[in-house]
Amino acid sequence: MTGMLASVTSVNEAEIVLGAGVDIIDIKDPSQGALGALNTQSAQDIVNYIDGRVMTSATIGDLPSEPEIISTAITKTASTGVDIVKAGLFESVIDQSLLNIFRGKSEQGIEIVIVLFADKKPDFALIEILAATGIKGVMLDTAMKGNGTLRTILNDNLLKCFVDTVQSAGLMTGLAGSLVLDDIAPLLLLNPDYLGFRGALCRKHQRIEEIDEMSVHRVRNKIPITSSNATQLSALP
Image (cartoon, rainbow, N blue to C red; front, side):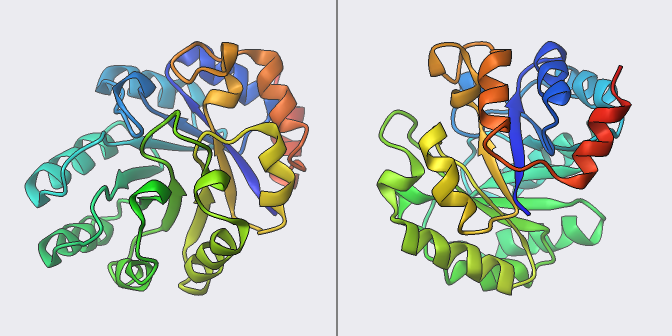
């Protein structure tokens, strides 16, 4: 069953989406790019507030694919206590030294999700190569916000191919990229492990604005709730 990921920037926003029963709370700073990294202390505060009630993830930032930079950012992000560290590949090719970084961090017990970008024309053949490094998952997003949603950049057949390829490799798969309410039903048919949202949850549907509780519930209501989240919601005060 497909879960819901909500990206947040603060403890207050985390409280709102937790109350709505999201499956994954993602920590990022959308003002700093597609995968903008929130400062370490704020990220730790959010992780401490969530206290294991749902899965957490955090982005390492919009960084060049340089092994030393990526390695340092992964370690720093993992130090916040998040369950998953998300790293983006903004280039169409990947160097062996970077693959070695992913393998080494995975062997250290860091759960990594690699983000590919639909508007960067990703090569899905990379998925099998990435899977061999021991990462946890691969998701598809958009790098340039405001230039169309995921489904206006790639058609549903290509998105289905992505989901099937990732899942066949034994990895978690996610779809995101300026998704709106009308995207949810068609994407649920593709059976990804989760759909990711930021802009659709915010005031004026602007990703750099604060999260709006009513908008969160509009999205949540279109994604069938999982049994684990039903338990989570019943435990909330």
